[in-house]
Length: 261
Image (cartoon, rainbow, N blue to C red; front, side, top):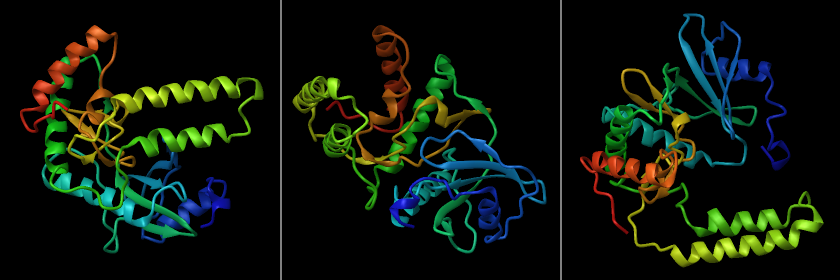
């Protein structure tokens, strides 16, 4: 699929039905759209009343190899009895293609959203993250990116400053602010950390709770420092966040050592 199809304009209900039928899944209910910023995700029942979630990946965002690495990581987590949602293998593969769209089929997992102010849940999530990182540290992703200044600062700056939607009267100030921001981050940034495989988008919305935590949506998984999967769980003022971080780290380090660097 070329860049002209970067949007999901052509992803009609009929195409979704045909895509799932191509792997032997017949929808017997309506499609319920689930929250997803990058992809299109739908929940439905099949003819046997089994509930599934189908994810259609945004064209041109990830390569086949990168998506398969994500799937392999979640499969390894499940095999290690770490509660994560991994795509189903159908016809010897987890990644499918129809009319140019890449998609995967997942079991539908119920649960309520993780409560950020629940200390018992936080302790449990911290220990599970320690186990995820323990496994993630065994080898890096080969095809997925590593967190760094190029992808997180330099490229976004270039895109923002070349965007024609930025009003002329604020462009100069915006350029100055971005330059100051990048200079500050460069001052503190270093590469003296162990790159491990991460969830990388580990906020409360990607953790379901039902008699324990289940991690979902590894679409942003990449290599990076372990702290990336911890800081997004913090909330409140600075003092509250420091107390939370201390508790998270204490529980986390029962399974994986957090580098002080």
